[in-house]
Image (tube, rainbow, N blue to C red; front, side, top):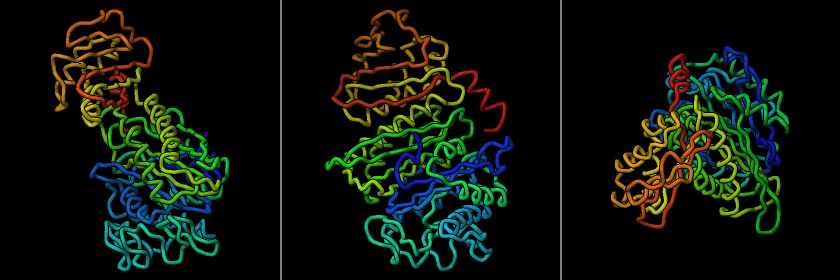
Length: 447
């Protein structure tokens, strides 16, 4: 049930002292190949953390040999020193995986931390060096084998650009450099092919349990492949990702373009449909790495099917562990003129504090659902809408249906169904109720 379920991956999670509790806080996931194809999606928040700035440029190579993650600090708005630390972390991982491991020299760090070195490409300090392939970084470096992100040969070194970096925790908090780099060394020393569970535990913040998932599939030739994933995120779950870090691995032998297409298809209907509290993070990352170790060559459709299974499972685990929540609410919109309309309507209900508070109070107040629907620009006739709560159609043709008293909201799972009667499209968005515990958790201390 971990990122090491797929062949060709090792992982570790260790305590580096970044968290005051002494809990594990540094994770490392390594792709041993033979391929190193990778793809990722990131937060659409314009205020991005240093690791996102770095990783969004690095992934343009279509390759990643490793990802290093830390909890205990977001490394966001931490100034020049924060970007230097991101670069140094990636560089150290590359050196360790190449058989070295001395700490990067001061002159190797980017100038001032906010921009690239003179020999690097422009782009916020996170771009590939000039000796790498042009064109947005989509091609392999000259010394690598072609083939859509296949990994470097044994005699080649792994560069910082081959390493993705993720951080989570408080914005404005810069982790201690020595502690973090020591944690990276310890994680490298602890790497194992059964280290996925430890890695999943090390990325937790306000999560109460680690989130992991695995799915298995076959390609058209009957060759088996595995998709495994881990995730963290318990607050600020909102669209365009949600305060979450997700690492997904597969041993399928596919190129970066196939990974990117499958990943975007999967995240669009899973993580992008989580809207727990309407808040969007600066650090969201979903990374997909392929080792090619199984030899299976699934199509985009075949890979996307099993990738979506893993992402959906992880998304629901995130929802179930959302801060202070008593209910998990699925909001399905049917009969929409377009999928965008369906998502807009579902999201409007998911963001209604009035409705979410009613669910917390176990009050089947369908009027609050209709009030939210009416705030959207979706196509529908306000005089012809149906609403069901937990399968009971409490509103028919925009009037009272079955008695609301027949709806029980005692169970954690709550379903809302809205029929717009305007077309064939449907979409589902997931959210939580609004509770006293959520307010307490986000006001009693920094999180």
